[in-house]
Length: 350
Picture 1 (cartoon, rainbow, N blue to C red):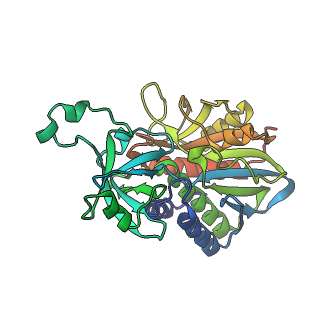
Picture 2 (cartoon, rainbow, N blue to C red; picture 1 turned 90 degrees about the vertical axis):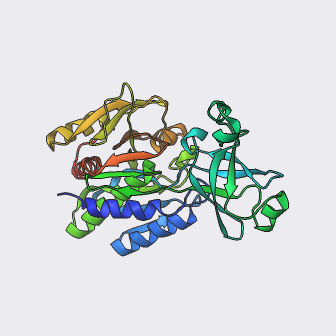
Picture 3 (cartoon, helix red, strand yellow; picture 1 turned 120 degrees about the horizontal axis):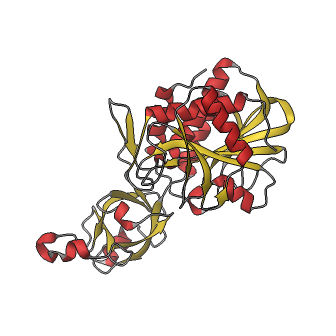
């Protein structure tokens, strides 16, 4: 049994095109809701705006929960400068150099969209020379240049832009003939698309899972409290489907499913991790076990909130995480296959 990776990639491209920085996710959650309705999957909304879809299983006394998050990195207007440029405050954990030169959109309180570009205040080498490269990329030295004829603060206010307006980044989604998917916000919209692909396959085949399973689409993960509440009491195992970090000293690459042994919150449940590893081996999947030193997931957030669960974390390998990211169809496929194998397995770790 395998998931349609064409559907996963198509769903990701749709998701990536909908701006959804943490705190402003209503539009993308509406799209997810519509997609679940098309698939015929029952779901409900939480007070925080998350979605919990349910697939009934043979055993309803114990349940599993899988989560992926649809919120992304972004920014807010911190200050309107006298010259009509904008200062930003960042949403989520990333550096200004990751978005320097990026096109962006400011969404006003009335819903108006104003485009712009994120630049250093000393962007021109013809004016600032070596200072252009040496200037620190910080909230004091970065600004948004709006694509409107604005020269004063009042000009900006007249556009309807105010402090606290959300700013989203152009994802620049590209799918190559060689199978690469490169875009902003692969973390974690790719895994949301994977879960949708899994749900589509389950609905098409009418598969009966051994345990009732909840699919939790969270909308506040990047700021630390996405899937840490509204967890059904019968949930025993909690698996976050997020992304595998690639870099020096890592085993993960862009073609595998990455199984996390430990992140900044500490080790993940060893029994569940071992179970996932055995499933990957039994199904001939390309997988790696890795440690993510500067990382946290909704699964670890749930534990910090006091949930009595067994927790795990997997995801497709993603290069340049929290920058302009890239993965490959093979990583999406390996992750989807591991999710399906896990859902059909009957072993418990609690």
